[in-house]
Length: 124
Length: 282
Image (tube, rainbow over all chains, first blue to last red):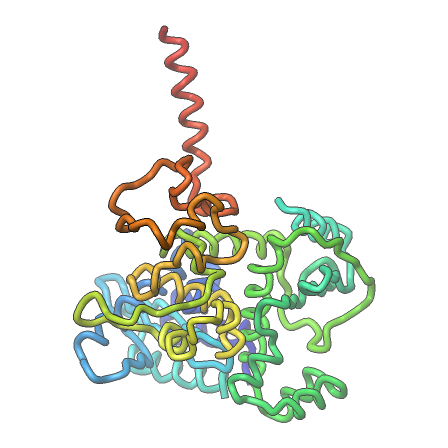
């Protein structure tokens, strides 16, 4: 079983992980984050929450008649991959795991699989 | 800094362990100067969340509370370590949001007392205060008026447009709203944090999905205006919002009782500097 701090260490152990963060989606607060230089955790947590919110709003419009439930979200930029995994918990949430991956070294499929397994161990 | 903030900061400096009881409003548990748990009478407690969301029966929870505590809770498998930490984090921040601004009662500190969950997560007092301020700013950014926080939630009966998207908490609030319950009462009914319900209600208000509060039925604390209350029924009423009235006019909409939520302190400083500069010019 994983705690919140040990979960973050496991995320950072994914090959190619540059930095990672746990975000409370309701309030946009950084629950835990790895030490990355030059990143304002509070600000990036709030911004990621807004991005997720905009995505689910957009998807709600594109699939009328469906209830949108995002499991994960992947964005690839010219510098790297960004992975977000949403976890439902007993309390509200979702709790979001965010990880930034190196473009060259990371394997996106592997990283996604590892995130899925970490999320499973954190909440069940 | 409010009184409770500075009292807490003092206890943190002395690295105290114990429980600070704030009248009937709530209790703050400290361990070695750091906050381990906080409960507030206005927000759902950890126990309430577990039972309201159907994770545990009240009897099983009482059993764990009286014997075994956190270890038994985890052993019996109704909640994982990660979920417990996350739930405590949410409950404490939610309680802090409503408890820290309170004043009036004299808090009593009882050294040595512990919460049955023990230490799950350790908050430093300055961090708690900072997060509460951030949350207040977030609320004000969505919808500036705090009136909707305390008055009954009354959804609009018709949509002003063709379609709208709602998130989960907004949906739950709309389903549960009986036009009498306030946001914090709804939070306890649906088992969500008080803050998440305030966020949902302010987003609903910003989207124009709530009825505007009526002046005669307004939130408590704003006593009806004696001048306009008597002849309101007999006189033809002017359409609301047709002509803005100056704030000193007897029929003008009343200003909120508390300090303005979005009041920018730099404005006053700027005006003072302008005034000084103009005086120096002349």
